[in-house]
Structure formats: structure tokens, C-alpha cells
Length: 161
Image (cartoon, rainbow, N blue to C red; front, top):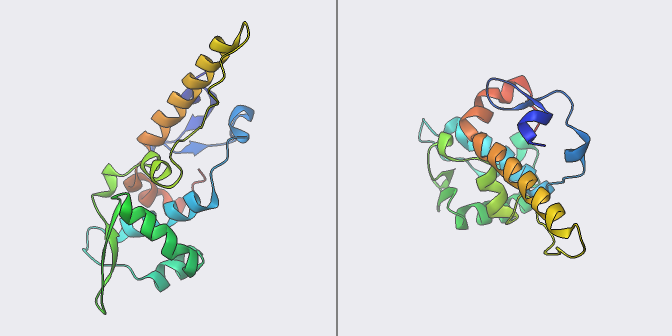
């Protein structure tokens, strides 16, 4: 079963309605959620060339400031954001919002979208393992298609991912 066949998607490529049972058990960390919120904020100010300050992002996106420092460091090390030090410093996206996807964030923060065991034993192990690989590929393809320009435009409409 492919993810696009399981759920409905709006014109921006964001999920609508109820998520199928198969994907309700797939969990992303709070760190990924916080990172995505902050990147939506940075996407909104990208065109203006502004730099965002930690205190503002923490307040606006409801992310604990001390945790945000760690997240921003990981995003910077992963090449998704840039920072400037000093009184006039702050954070900005490293590239245009339409080139940064949810998959990019997950890979920087978590490594893999869906970690699979390397077990393929028993009579059915290889088939089951291949089925999960197919699910992971579909999930990654969908996450790759949702970019921060789409999230930025849809953020006022309260999309849930």
C-alpha cells in the first residue's frame, strides 16, 4: 500500500483528514516537530533577508529556548540554516524554502524517516522486510514533496502533519 493511496492530500501536498492506522504508530520526535516549526518561521522571513533571534522564535513557535539552541545547532551543522553572531546576529534559512523538505529535517535531526530492523529470517522475512522498505520509500517520497514554502503558505490554515 502506498502512502498516497492511504490518505487524502490537499493542493499544497499536505495531509487532510484522518491518518490511516498503518501510520499512526510511526512517531517523530518532539525535536523534529520543534525544528519544523522554527523552519516555517525562518521560511516566512526568508525573502526579506531578515535574521531571526532565538528569543523571538522560542516565543512565537512555543519552543523552549534552551532546547531551541540545541536544535538550531543541529540544523546549522546539517546545512539547513546559517547563523551570524553578534548584536545584529541571528538565524536564517541556508537556502530557499522551496528547496528544504520535511525529509531534509528528519534526516538532519533523526537520521532516517523509518528505521527498519535488518532481520530477514524465516520463510517470510525477506518479503516482509521488502514490504517495509516499500512503505519507507513511500513515506520518504511524501516527506520530500512537502517543502517549507508549502508549509509557510499553509501555516495560517492550521495544517496538521
